[in-house]
Amino acid sequence: AMAALVHRLVRWSLSQAPPPAEAYSAAWFQEKALIFTVFGITGTTSVFCVRPLLSRVGIEGSLYEGPWSYRLGSFLLVSPAYTVLLVSIGTLAGRHAYFGRLSAKMLGRFGPA
Image 1 (cartoon, rainbow, N blue to C red):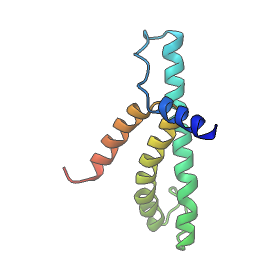
Image 2: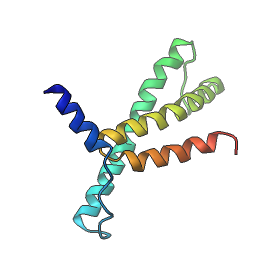
Image 3: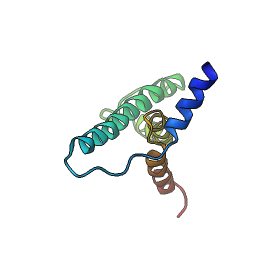
Image 4: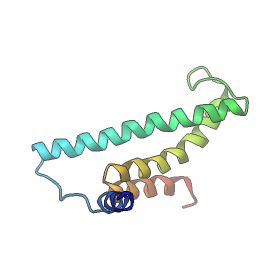
């Protein structure tokens, strides 16, 4: 029973997104709301996960007040964590293809061109 449930979840989350809805229709607004929700959950989760890591290595602060080591460490850790979480949470939301392409684009900007 559990294996069947996991199989259904994987099949559903890796399926193609529905075709684009007509702009400003109810389906269009639902799709945009889903995408914005995934972005919101991902941003919050990535910062929530990275802050304890910085504290563990003795770097305390904020992006606004500093120190620069906190700002740099936060940027270097949040960026890759965000892309991984974006694919994961996007997959759970059933939009693996969309968020996978977006994350690949984001990671490509950090690597050599």
